[in-house]
Image (cartoon, rainbow, N blue to C red; front, side, top):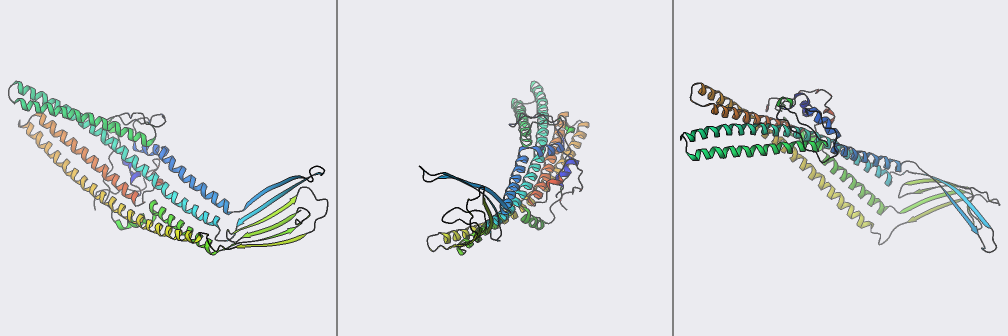
Length: 481
């Protein structure tokens, strides 16, 4: 199933009239040189706005992960502190001082918020990757469907024009018969109404062609020109096979579908929030520090010093160095300072409520994951049922075509025997054309249904859909096994 769409690059789609799409509501570019093939359509969709938007969203997730990793890594900060003092103001001298400081910090404890931020960003990138893949596959399937819709619309327009021509011939015969008083006036009026109905249907068919061309142009993000002849369209793909093991498709979808991945990531994020709230409630604000060097005293500022600190709750360790840019006139003694700060909230912090809220959020995320899995299960099974229905309709269309061809053969034989008129043969030929169009549409619908099932089960890989590479796998044919 993963190579169904790429097979269209070899087998293609059928032909119909030429139509030029009206200008699409996007920046104008050079129109595609006719005839437009499915391979060209799959190439152009890779530059469409929807494709580029999906790429940008994934790139944004990549940058967020890079930023989170940078915050969790080694951080170096350099700063300066300058002051100019005159005391007393009326008689004192200006005393200047400038100090250069540098600090190196890093997260060292496993519960550090920056480490959890990296894990959250990694889950977000995994989710964005699944969404990017699904968006690309969706756009490629839409391109196949839009190309087929344009083909079916133009084929329908050609058939409607043929119906108008036949109705016009039948009206001419009816007028001659009425002149000879062979039919009543009501029969002539019925033929006139039939011609008017055929003309209205032809106008609607032309509108459908224009709408199909515009839909294709909007999807691709540029104006396109549809093929000018019936043979210029690609051939109809063969009927796909019925799904063999729906449970296996469901199992694959429950692992790879973006909805499930998104819900699982949200559950993991909710769990991280719950653990952070629990840690915030149980762990006190505790930090320790050490400083060595020319420490500040009551009579002057500090000189050259080095120090370190560790914040237990945030899990960040830091080392600092500081030295004045101007040496002190008097020698400063060397000393050592140790510090320990701790605080534990007793009442009114609201941390218990935050933990309860995090627990509720985790439970809601777990329910959302179950709901996503059930939705994916139902979607895959529905897509499989749609494919079986489409194959049934294709079989019905095949039988209808066989009956129409048999009727045409009989009508031609009756014409040779003088039992029917050429108009009856023309009507039978039109019925065969209608049956053939119905079979082409049913086959295309079954093919698209197989692609939708492959997309729903996460089997359709957009990297295999390159129009410049041959299809490495054969498309299964023959309908239901």
